[in-house]
Image 1 (cartoon, helix red, strand yellow):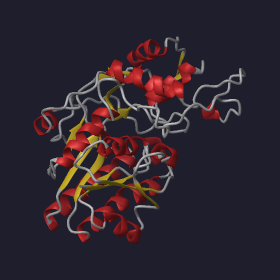
Image 2 (tube, one colour; image 1 turned 90 degrees about the vertical axis):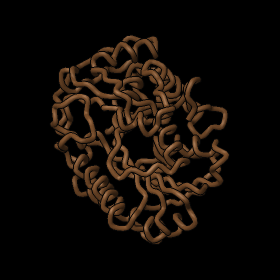
Image 3 (cartoon, one colour; image 1 turned 180 degrees about the vertical axis):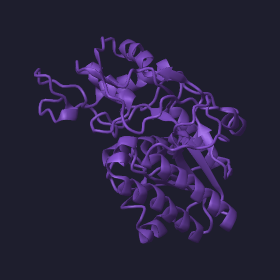
Length: 348
């Protein structure tokens, strides 16, 4: 099989590329990325065909999709706060970009398209756990773009017979996830803060809950969906109901790093949902053999990876790599073939 990954130089995409390359059924992995949020170093040393460019470039998509069997569409401008700051950019990248991917897949012979949506589409709906039949109530421009992603996949399935599978990702974390940008996810950001002796910033009172899924588990599901050509036009949650409050996450990070974390509270961020937990029933029915990596194990693997990269400061003056510290240690990077980006129990 020849598989295309849009956003393949990003966090999930680069991990997925590694997973697919280990499968005997996969003969070629192609990566499309404009490197706006991805990093070419994340796929360094991997035997992938790299197409640098934007998913809104129809000619680029035509070249990358030619002769392929499936597309895993992960390219996006992530982050709720980013979308609040620049709604149009999020719309063009996420909604229009998805439409371009689907049209290219249709023209290439109705390729199998698996795409990433988001649990943010549930928004203000208070029902827990979140099942796919709930009324969506997006609270941010980002959530709206992901709802559009799902709708376009469904429309192309019904209008053109395109085989599709939209997944609603919840909070994915793990090795390869950067902590050095303004929209960093909570787990790598807090691990990096703990390792560098910085304050862990909690937006809101910390009682808000999230459903965290280890990237190795996510990649296992995506790879299985590709190999078995799973088709389901209705969205499927990709999370296993591992609900934890942000305040309860702090001691888990302390245990993984062996360091005490000092917290400070700031105002709740606009667009953030108060609680999140996936109903895993449909996911389990479609992928009955896959079990999630335990949260403690996943956090430990993530902390180990971050401590081995350039996140820790060595200047002795309170800076860190994320803040541009010139004395930050340059440890082995993600692309170093000597680093196995996985926990012991679940490789990705």
